[in-house]
Length: 424
Image (cartoon, rainbow, N blue to C red):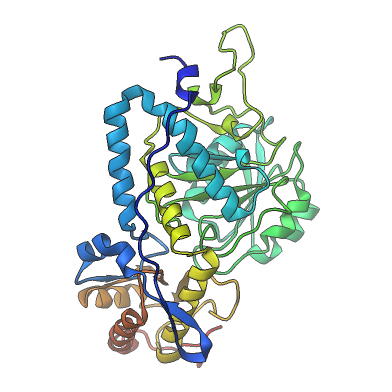
């Protein structure tokens, strides 16, 4: 099989049967909520009797993703190597359309995929024409990017400047940087950054603006139409896209990073010259960021989940509204003397989790786990992630468990100030 073969179209799979649409319920203050547990029946049965609030970390997979995963296996068995015609043809193009629709991109061809989001960051960096690369980032970026930036600085291919998130636009405008990196929504607070202000600074010759959309993509409505020609946007399927691992997502603006140093044979596409005496060929669209052989099952799951959401009329806006209802129900009834909320559910658009910071977060997490409830507690940070497989009964169970755990922990970590459980 040569490179051309994998791009020859094959027939798309038959879509799954339609799942019954959920009805809505009106709750306090006119908010609307519903229950979509039936879409996650297998995952919830596997979790029972535990109750997990880790949708911001490992989002549970809906039932359709299992069928899609099996479909990927079936295609690998029946098509063998010819499966790549389908993966890089109809499956790839469908996924591009889903991402373009979600982000309101003018052209799906600016979207590409990889085994993980970090891999895409590395490929963008590799396209920088000169080293060391002058990097500007906020202090609130996630460990994966921060570790990589520090390592690039250690190996002298990069120099790193860190600033507070509310200062990054001002520093970026005044400084001389090659790569500006900022989260759309910060992993440790749920607050949305001022990322749109950076778009006007981007130039093909530098600086390049890379937005980490991992806690924004399909968590809050995101419209890139006005900035799509200026910014890179990196996301993934592991969290709010409900598709699991192996689904890194990139929107690459036209004219930026045209020749990544890190590349692979899939980037050769169907018309490039691979002769060793010719320059390495790259496509003008996002295929220039392709690598080599990868596990395509994430594409299958992602497409199946997207079809399910469309059939259920579950847009990101609808899901975010449901989550806000659950968050408000929790905040209205809970009083946690040992924890300070670092974001407010009234600040819209809101992230899909509540973040608390205080001594005792780990102890509260362990106390909840002993009661069969999973939250994310690391050091002084405790996060509670909500999704469409939660309902108000789940929130009531969470509130009851928290009340006992929080009071027990208050004896170990008493607050020295006022404002118990405040939303500052």
